[in-house]
Length: 224
Image 1 (cartoon, helix red, strand yellow):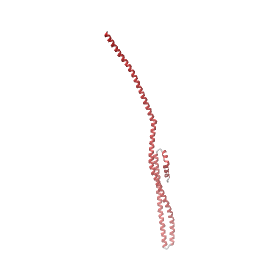
Image 2 (cartoon, helix red, strand yellow):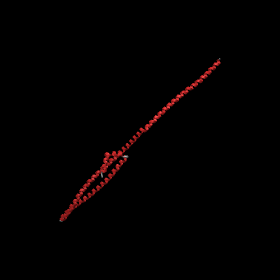
Image 3 (cartoon, helix red, strand yellow):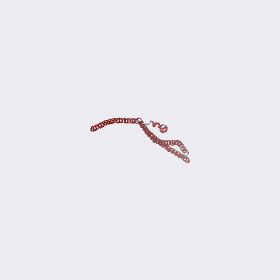
Image 4 (cartoon, one colour):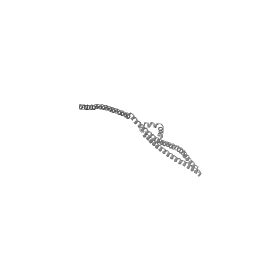
């Protein structure tokens, strides 16, 4: 009857963490523990109710036997007072038989009463254990969810470190390379532009010199 009650004590004290580590969903496992405990408590409540009923039946029979013995005692006295000693003797013999039955019923009733008390105490302990498990269940489920969230964050961070972060660094290197190539092409363009400007300047200077020479020749001809 109390196998699960004892099992719950062991789980709560030493095995629960191990079971939770192996469970795919600790929350569902904890809920199942509660359901199992509630079912066992319901079975024990039925057993306690049956035992209490048995105790009441024994008490009723004991009261009847005790009343019968008392009545026979009074009847024996009445028969003796009326002068019928033989009848008084037979009544007392029957009274003694009923007294023996009453004594047996008293022992059975006291044992039943004791057992009822023990079962009630066990039931109270089981309900107390159930309340404790319910409180622990909420705490453990919250801890389980926190652990799962922390593990998910750690996996995400680990993925960023090995995948996204390294990819980001490669893209950064490519950007730096492209910037260097752009700067080189800009320097080359500026260098080529400078050479072209110098060549253009030479052409411009030559034209001016030719015109200046022509003007000088014209002035010399006029002076002659």
